Image (tube, rainbow, N blue to C red; front, side, top):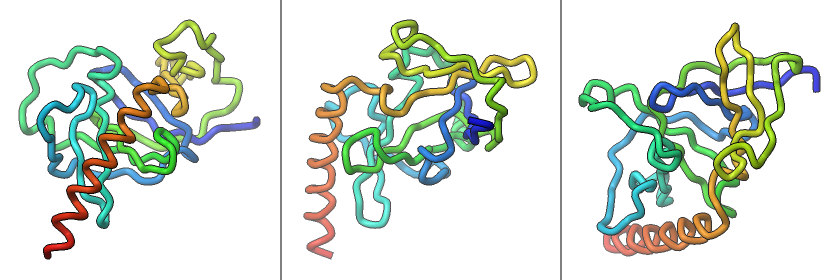
Amino acid sequence: MASLQIVLFDICGTECALRRDAVRELLPLPHLRRPPRLPAPVAGFFNLGGSAVPALGLDVLFGLSREATSSEADLYRHLILVEGLTPGLPTALLVDRVEDVQTIPADRLFPVREEGTLNGCVEAEIDLDGRLVHLLSLERILLAGERQALSELNRQAQSRLDTWSATA
């Protein structure tokens, strides 16, 4: 691998990245609907062209503490739309801010042992001009049971959306 294109983003002051080919779209933060009794990491659902899409708060999922935020700070939050987190369904990752898309030379990537991180979700560390950036593995962000639960929640949200669409 000569180089790797990445999407850089911030979660509670922690710089992270995803492989660019894992990212479908970068979106401003829409209004999220949050039905009662959702698991804490699910920030809510939004309607994307008739499809209910879950948004996962990576800060909550990773147990990162957020300082008191103002509504102005929320203006800069983004969703990273990805495929492959849950089988056959798009999922959005809620982050504080998408910072950049960059191409990184392979000699700046340092592999991380899978057992050394939560769910093994960090696949490598990136030296970015002296800053350490965590390259996340999309396939390992959620446990199998979490994927299954999220798929069921998505099915319920889609069913509700379809019911309301049928009456319009």
